Image 1 (cartoon, rainbow, N blue to C red):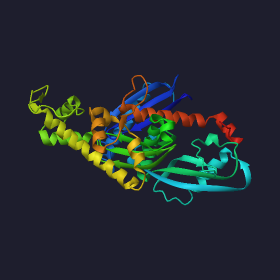
Image 2: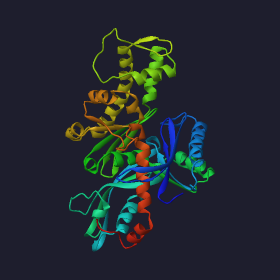
Image 3: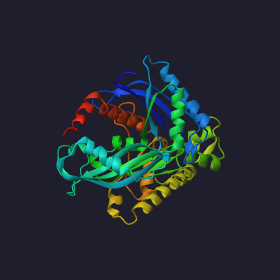
Length: 395
């Protein structure tokens, strides 16, 4: 594969996407190929049907390969939140005398911090909420530390473990397809760093990724995730509720959901919605109530998450900082962000890539993964390794 391009496998709860992309100008990207395939999806307990997922991955990758002239042997895989465990730790290393911080010291801090962690799975990435040199000042970038003399280096560190099942299953599947180098990226971490500004992340930031079958909520600080939890809730739950309550099939439920809008208040009781094919009518108020009730299940889980994690913390953090929402779910339900805001009594905002043609919440994960993979590739470049051999460089 051309050196400037990377291959991405984005795994969502009802669809997988395979794409080849490179850096463009002004923060844009250039794509060499992209293909998506539907499959049975996953829940918190794992894939609903392993064979369905395997077929979707093979089909998506094969479709792109057929129209690509180069060789693809390296691939970055986005790991969904249900397959990732995030462990955090405050850790300190001390030096016998004052010395200037170099890149190897940052690595040593992460390595020694992981020694007594009992993560279930394989550690695929590490990041820091912030660093400190003992003066209570927070450094959100390791580059700011290089060359600074100190006798102590502290870090609020995050380690990301992928489940053994997911790790081994993906390695086997992609290995059979000829990929000799498989790298894993936590999807929500990639989204948080791409969609949320550095300034926003220097305080507590909140990201709600609303998918088709599963959704996740993440608390972000600096370059790390503090807490994260996933739920078996999403667009699929709303469609099931419409099917059961209105007695319609899946296709009609999708048609109803696509036309619905719950952003406003109450609607006239006699207002009806007609299906396109057989012109059956359904009360708009009933449709909206079903959708809102299904969304309330997700809101209740998010509310419990915040209450459990931040019951004893200052409430100002929760009330002032908005919840950023992304994912295909928020794009499928018109007015969902407004309803979630009212239900949780919190400010919400919908976030998505600021890119032509990809400025939709359902594109967030694939673009964020591409951005992080390209950043990794740049850091691993020849000149970066040369700089690091001399201790890194100051910003």
